[in-house]
Length: 120
Length: 120
Image 1 (tube, rainbow over the protein chains, first blue to last red):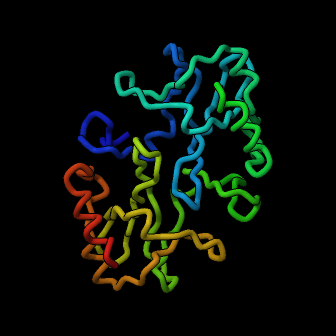
Image 2: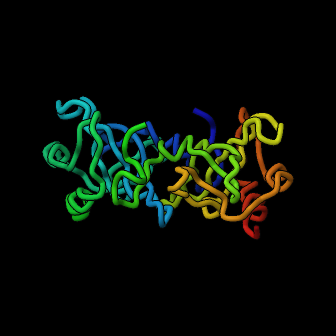
């Protein structure tokens, strides 16, 4: 880690390789997993999704969950990202996911992701 | 590398850890360096800057150059990013930069970066 830190400097920028590896917490502060990578919209330049690793959590092994970037926010007091809305373990387990050793079919499954997360 | 590839699937998303390490070419196709990381605006969720490593190029050692994301575009035919506008070696060498083993003062130097690159 280097020092392009949220708390060290008064700017609005965060490095992509700093977000990668950051913890994702539920809205109650319990750890869900960590952010594996970000998915960037090539046309708009917006971060559209975070791919979150729920490794070990819920006993479902190494699974990746695509989450809309708008479903989480950074909480500087705990130096982690957190869900905007509290999700139960069951709701988390049912979210669209894929095995860590497979590719995700972004082209066809993106609507499923949006439908699942937007509304909570 | 995994297969969330630009050419493999009909979607607009690219993974952050795929952009990291991608080549940056000048507008004439000559390699300038590679993208080290992206800087994301925490409020808007937009990719605002790419930090480019010009290692070896121009004989100036390992230097990092922050470039506005809007100054480059992805060229799928060569699987690399390229500058929108041709820059001379001298112009590239004079761009705001910092040593790879130092931190960049984003808070104070961001206007310098914008002033240098926006206008070309």
